[in-house]
Amino acid sequence: MLTGILAPSSGYVSLLGLDPWDPRQTLEIKRRTGVVPEDLALFDNLTAVEYLTFVGRMYLMEKTTIQQRSRELMDLLQLVDVEKKLTVEYSHGMKKKLALAAALLPNPDLLFLDEPFEGVDAVTSRVIRDLLAIYVKRGSTVFVTSHVLEIIQRICTHVGIIVKGQLVEQSSLEDLQRGSSLEQRFLEKVGTSEEASINLAWLEDGESNSGAANGDSAKSTVATEEPSEAS
Image 1 (cartoon, one colour):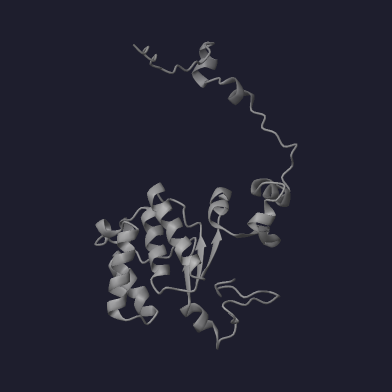
Image 2 (cartoon, helix red, strand yellow):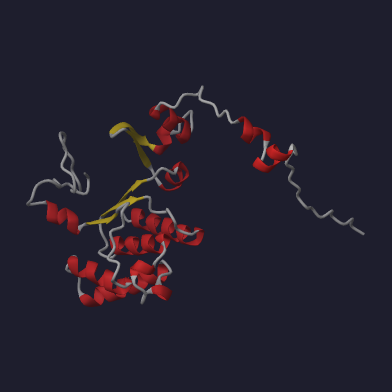
């Protein structure tokens, strides 16, 4: 809805001081916005370079600017080694990085990221976090959606909790965690019962299928090396 794909049934939204549902203003918003959707919607039969060039031309960028930024982003996100491969051959993590590169290419003022760290290795995750920190420091805004609360705690300053399509909580992360934790506040809002318990006797007993059939108990052994005494 915030990216202009769905129209609201009621209410009003302002993005970058503009109305996303006003035909006279929506193109200006899109020109200043980058999006990484859950469904990455890449073109399978294009290489990374071809896809970034296509996106750059959609934003009416100069050819030399597209080439320079594409090279820098592919270097940063470790896509250079696969730049000549078709995106259909990419892993999910590689596709995620290419989608992020495309969103950053036009240097937008507003960035929407849906689960940006899903399927991304630890090294690239650190690079993305540092990149977003620089992006925010200059005064731009990143809107992140994620089910991983640890990520929200590490990169966000303000949090909104949505339950069944309704925004039930919105405040700064600092206020939200005051006297509690983000996880606890989230569980309170989604209505998880504290009385809910896990009752799987077979899991607690560690009984395997073969052990149950033979009357044997299953055991695990961990090999350890005794430390040598200091001389």
